[in-house]
Image (cartoon, rainbow, N blue to C red; front, top):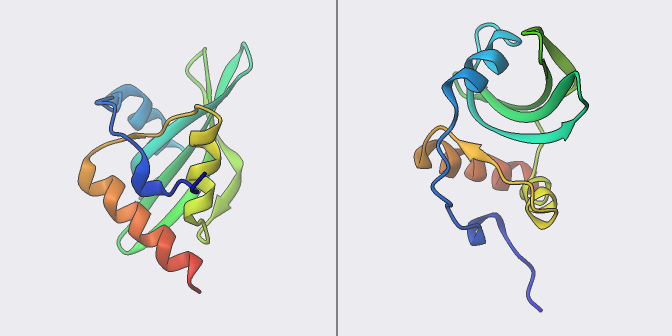
Length: 117
């Protein structure tokens, strides 16, 4: 069996929810959210992983979105993410939702660059 890569993932046509994008972005002022993935549901809140960008700087972050409207930046803020990070979630049937195909392609290019460092 051959190993999957980030480029094997099928675009399922999911459109990023503007409310989720805005809520995630509110936890990281000055950054824009390019994509996200719901990781856990806790009852009172949902945990998301997200890719954010400011200029040429990209970061993998965690954020908690509470049912009562609160938002809290999570414990993970990393700039060294690689392709295997996305592959791990896809293998667990957790899918990323991107703002656009261009955003997705750029993030995967950054992930490949990070891997070669």
